[in-house]
Length: 219
Image 1: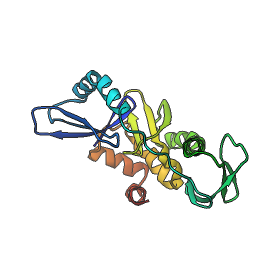
Image 2: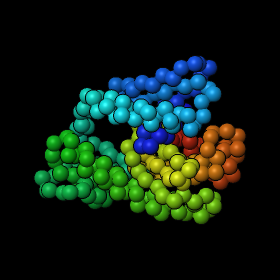
Image 3: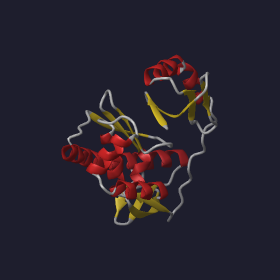
Image 4: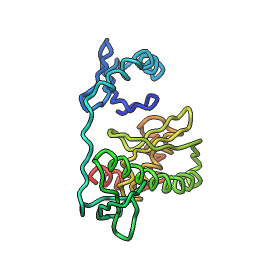
C-alpha cells in the first residue's frame, strides 16, 4: 500500500517480521517494511526520526535527464490529444491553439518545466471546479486540495488535516478518470483504509468506480 508522510508517498508493506526496513530505490521510491503490529502513529514517529536521512538520500540521487520534446509529437491534456508546435517566440507558458500546443523551442529542462506548468494550470482549473462539486454531492468536504508530482499514486488524503493531494500526471487523463480519483480521495475523508466500508461508500457515490479505476490503470 502507499502511505502518505508529509510530502512523501511511501510504499508500505506490513509483514510478520520483528524489525523495520527502510530503503530508497535508484528511481527515488521510498520503501518501508514494518511489523504488522505497528500503528500509524508508530510509523510516523519512525519516519520523523529518519526524515534527515531520507532527504539526504534523495538529494544524492543522480539527476534524471530531462524529456526531449519534438515538433509534431502528441501531447495529452485533460483527455484531449494535441500536436506540439515549436516556435522561436519567447513564451512563458505553452499556448493552446485549436488542436496545437505551441511551446518555445529551448533546452529540454526549460521545456519540460514549462509544459509541467501548463499541466498544473489546467489541472488546477479543473480541480477547483470539480472538487467542490463532488464535495457538495457526497457531503464529504475537504479543507483544501493541492497538486504535486507523484509517480506511485494518483492521489492521497490526509484524513486528519482534511487535505487532498492529486498527482500532476492526472493532467493527461480523461476528466471522467480524474473524477474517479476525486471521489476516491473524498471517500478517504470518512474511511481511511481500503476495507469493505470504504468500497461500499465509494460504490454509493460512484457506482461505476471499478470501470473507471481499470481504465485509469490501463490508460
